Each structure stands twice: as C-alpha cells, then as structure tokens.
Amino acid sequence: MTRLVVGPFNRVEGDLEVQLDVADGRVASARVNAPMYRGFEQMLVGREPHDALVIVPRICGICSVSQSVAAARALADASGVELPPNGVHVINLMLACENLADHLSHFYLFFMPDFTRPVYADRPWFGEATRRFAALAGEHGRAALAARQRWFEIMGTLGGKWPHTLSIQPGGSARGVEASERIRLLAKVREFRAFLERTTFGAPLEEVSALDGEAALQRWRAADPQRGDLRLFLTIAADLGLESLGRGPGRTLSYGAYRQPDGRFELPAGLWREAGQTLHAADLDAIREDATHAWLAGDSPLHPREGLTEPMLDKPGGYTWNKAPRLAGEVVETGAIARQLAGGQPLIRDAVARHGANVRSRVLARLIELARVLPMTERWLAALSPREPFFHADRLPADADGTGLTEAARGALGHWVSVRNGRIARYQIVAPTSWNFSPRDAAGTPGALEAALEGAPVREGEDTPVAVQHIVRSFDPCMVCTVH
Image (cartoon, rainbow, N blue to C red):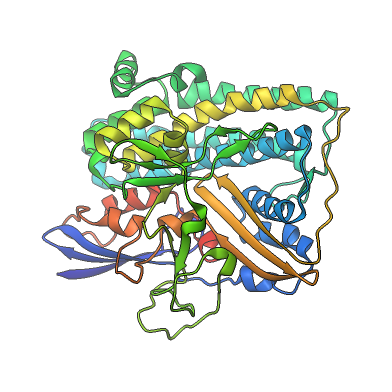
C-alpha cells in the first residue's frame, strides 16, 4: 500500500487536496480535503438580514447569482413576499445565464484539456483534441471563451454587473427590462445558440435534446463523428471507457430548477434512485450535516436550520473544513445529472440505467442541459411584460425563519436563515460541492467523490493520476462554496 497526496488541483475553483491509498495499481481508498476556511456563516450572525444579499454572493466569483438567489429565497420565505411573474422570469434568466456559462467553462476549460496530456499522445483522437482543447491554445476553447464573454452581456443588462449583482431581491428583480432591451437580450441568446449549434453540437439544440437513448446517441454520433465537440467527446469516452470510471452513490438529489410563476419547475425536484430507476419526493427535513471528520465543533448531526459552524482545528479525526451532508443518512450526488434524471430526460436516464452516474454521464448531462435550457430562456424573454411590475417590496418580521433552495450549475444549493430581534441569529449554507465532496460521516461512510475514486487506475510512476483528474473534474468542484 502506498499513499499519494494529489493537489492542489489546477483548473478548480478554490483549494483541493485528495489523499489516496493505492494498492495493486488502483485506488483502495480516498479522503478529500477542503483545506481553506472562510467563515461566511459566522460573518452574517448579528447583521441586518438584508445584508446577506450583499455578503453571500461574495462566497464565490463563478456562482454568485446562485448564492444571491438562495439568499433572496430564504428571506422571501421568512417574509412571505410573493414574486411577480416578471421577477420570476428575470431571476431565471440570470440564473440560467450563469449556469450555462459554467457548463461551457467546465467542458472547454476545465475538463477537456486533460485529454491533451502527453499520456494520450498515442490515441487516434489526440491531435484533434489538442487542436480544439489544448489549454490556452485550443481553437474551440478560445472560441468558447469569446462566446462566454458575449453571453455574459445579458447579465449586465439584467443585473447591472457580474459577479455580485445586487438586483436580485426577496421580492423579485430590482432592475426592470424595457421592451427594446428584450429585443437586444434575445439577440444575445440567439448568438449563443449559434455558437453551440455550430461548435459544441454541430446540430440544432432541439435535435440534441430530443435524443431519447444511448442507441439514438450512437447513431447520431456515427453519422458524422468529427462534427461538433460532443461527438468528439463521445469518441474519446468510448475509447477510454469513461463510462466505467467514477461511479456515483446511486442516488441523486435536485431541489428543482427554474421555478415558474405557477409554482412548477422547468426541471423538477426529486431524489432519483438508480435501483429501480425511480423518482421520489425528497424529505428535506431529513437533511443532516455530520461534522465528525471536519475541523468543526459538534458531535451530533444537525439539520442546517439548527446548524453550528465553530472551528476546531485540533479536532481528532478531522481532515477537512467540509461537513458531511446526508439525506436520511444516505450519501447523494447532485448536479446537472440529478436535474436531468429528475426531469425525465430519456437519454440521461438510459445512460445511468446502463452504467450509473460516472465520468461520461456527468459530462453528457451538462451538455444536454445546455441544449435543453437555452430554448427555455427564449420563452422566458417572450413572457416578459415590460409594463408590469418586476418586484414586490418585502417586510421581514423581527423574528422569522426561512429556507432558500435553488439549483446552481453544480447542483443543490440551500440557505437556512433564522432572524431574532431583527438580526440574523443563525445562517447555514449547504453547497453542491458540500454534498459531492463530503468527508466520511460518523459511520465511516465515504462521500460521493471519495467513493467514486475507489478503484481508479494509477499508472506506474504517476504522482497525479490522470484517471483521478477525470473523476474529480467530472463533478466540477467549487471548493470556495464548500468552505463558505
């Protein structure tokens, strides 16, 4: 048995280390360390509740809108304010703008450059992958950066700036949209659509999102294997057997994404179980955070509404700043794959039924989500009524409790706030990477990534195993959110 400490990882938001025990050329066990502590939950205690709308987005520079939405929803829940339809649509547009940009960044900048490493130089696809995806130099990676920059101009119109917009409020959006602006916004959506259809997919978005299973996907790929980056990814995945790498826990959680004025979600909520291929309502009262192996005080698992964040650096058995969230005692995975499974997307359900959640299916789910959600933004823009309100004022009682749930690009994000005598008495956050990169719990059960790394191959002489890189990046970690 040998031990490797891999990290810090490049192309990851925040600091991450992974300790690997390796035997017979494979990972026998793993421990994931989030080594940076930031303390946002303590910063908020004692402050005026609406201060959270300024402070919380600064947890992260790449998913700040998601943090804003969760904070605003927690305060809305505490105050009882209802959003007007325009406010719902604008917030969904901002959230989708950020989430789709994250998916694009993950594919082109974080994940695909690993396939241009010298270890793959003998593969038949290596030259084309290098031309498209090499870090800083790949033609398609550079084009994606330019497309992402233009796409984010939507955020300037809707929120004034990105990141850390202040236009997202408990009662809606503080920034109305004029009729002429709606036309310009639609032009930006159409420009982004053109990039995706030309470069990422080599096909109309509706054609991609309509793929109804692995058989249809393989026929689609075989018809023109070099056209579009999704097809090249599928070729690489098949050659390297990525469907057998990084198996998830068999359960995925989504809080539901893009809530509409009538209360329904464009991408429904739920707990998907691979065993039986069934979707269940998630009992969110059954969430507990276990701090057994975190450098944080606390002996008993607590629900976030009763949560405690108190540093304890010399805690016996601690090896990370991340708590271990569990749902009714079970490890769950979250992310685009959870949303697509809960939303009934047939290709992703078929892929997971065959091989489970894995490196290939996680990346595929993000790309399918790009194809599915962008047309939704066109509908939301069309639904705006510029002469109607975008915002309702909220009045927060002196004593109140609220919960704010949303779906960030990386998955289920929850904020829980308690207000007493007009001040924040407790504020707790469970981020998507908190779920996916959690440590062991009191029973010794590893988190989703820790378990997914078990069995990963380690080539002779590797000190940063490429298979481990693929598995870690398939979850698209955001460590600064994890150690909020």
